[in-house]
Amino acid sequence: MEGINMKSRFSIIQFFALVICCFGQFLAHAQPPVDNGDVIVIQGSGLREVESAFRLRSNPKLVDTTITATLPEYPLLVLSYATQATITPIKELAYSNKGNKSAKLTPFYAKVGIGSQVMPLGEVYYNSIGKSDFQYGVFAKHISSFGKMRDFAPSQFDRTKTGVYGNYNAKKFSIGSDIHYDNYGFHYYGIVDTAGIIDAKSIAQRYQDAGGAIKFSLHNGLKDSSKLNLDLGLRYNFFGTKKPFADSLAAWKSQEQYVAFTSKGTYKVGREAFSIDLNVFNNSFKYGIDGDSLSSIDTGIVSNDLILQLKPGVVTQLMNDKLRVSVGVDVTANVRSTTKVYVYPHAEIKYSMFDDIFIPYIGIRGGLKQNTLRSLTSSNEFILPNAHLLNENKVFDAYAGFKGVMSQRTSFNIGASYARVTNKALFVNDTLFSNRNKFAVIYDTMNIMTVEGSMSYQINEKLKIDGIGRFFSYETKSQAFAWNLPQLQFVLRGNYTLKDKFIFNLDMTLETGRKALVFDSTIANVVVENGQYAAPLKTFADINLGFEYKYNKNISGFLQLNNMVANRYARWYNYPVMGFQVMGGVTFKF
Image (cartoon, rainbow, N blue to C red):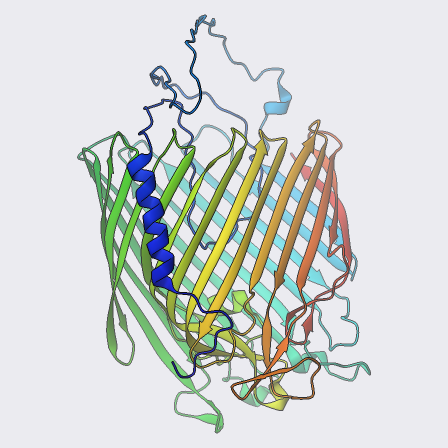
């Protein structure tokens, strides 16, 4: 196919034929496991971002519910031996918080620190406590840097976040709301400036992000049949940039207003759970003055993007709840200057083998992702404020794999997917020489193959380790490469607690295989492909280590070591990160 470049081609038909054959063998030869009341459930799906590791800080609470467990039986994996179990009743003990001060909840928490590069940090949280059905809280966070990136333009930044929330939980329903405000100021520092002559104000930018949401849930319990569970949500968000440096161009800034209404209803009848989603997303974007222009390539933009989504589906479980089948469809209408309707199939099959020790799965999905200025800047804050906004269309994403447990402490997931995506957003340095320190957003159609594996190991709350590795292969249509996207990605996170006094945290990220679009053929190691110049980016390697010492139940000290290998890799072309950093401080709660 003309215009398509791919270093290694892959046949999707051969790939999924092999996966389906293997999956069929599992169903044909695996002895259906016997029902076990002690079931380990592993949740997971392919191609998703790894969430930050966290520890549960709350104390255990008594649940006044008795669930009768069946006698366990074991599959014929090894020689079985007759076993007997004798249950000795334990006398019920009355619980009292008196004298157990460690169990006392505290509503106030604060964190204060200072780091190298003159980087102050402050966080304050206040949450309601007690047995009331109404909970509320407020928080404020700030971090900034007054240091300078060596050999580059001024790189100072500051970020402040505030928020308020409230929730009311009743037996049959719950209602909640939240409000947030985010103020982020930074500089487009991707310019070599060894002489220090660039004025910081001329490359400054500031994002204002404010909004709120309200949600309502009607819940009748997961075990109740023929009853409706309902979730409703309404969200509004404003996002805007600062006005240009010149006062005469005050109107030439970007702002968008986002409104979303979401609803989901679930109705269970026997083994089937029927669901339907009805969602409305609308984003209004404005840049400059409509019908006016600053130059031939910088004109005013006013656009409105409306998405209407209907997603009915059904989930059923067969073969003693070992086989789980979900089928649905996503019908999405995108209303812009013209209206387009998309239909995406959604189907997944999972089969539990050996009491959830091994679970193969296969499925297909798709969807329309709404790109906004807020979402694009969350990926790359250095983009131009007049970015062209198109929605990413995932025509299909076929995936397969297996997950399970190797022991009570170890779980794993191995899978692969093949997706067809149109309007995939890519970030490239602007073609104008005066704007080379900013990124334009371009779009391309591509096929993306992903192979990934993950593993988790946990010993209660003492030790937890999560690792995930992904390999990507991109087949682009118009661009020579999938700019700034990695070919190999690896993430490792760990947490270790020693005697409830010392807490260690490890966070390591590695990415390689990234390439940037450049406009200078004299750049070192530049590659010419389809008339485009591609500069390879160095391996993205970042290792962070955190340490916390609990002096007592209310006061602790922390030390954070960031970028321990002192690798000033380029997160984006011509945008190196800070080298080795140290931050320390104290935390309080009362």
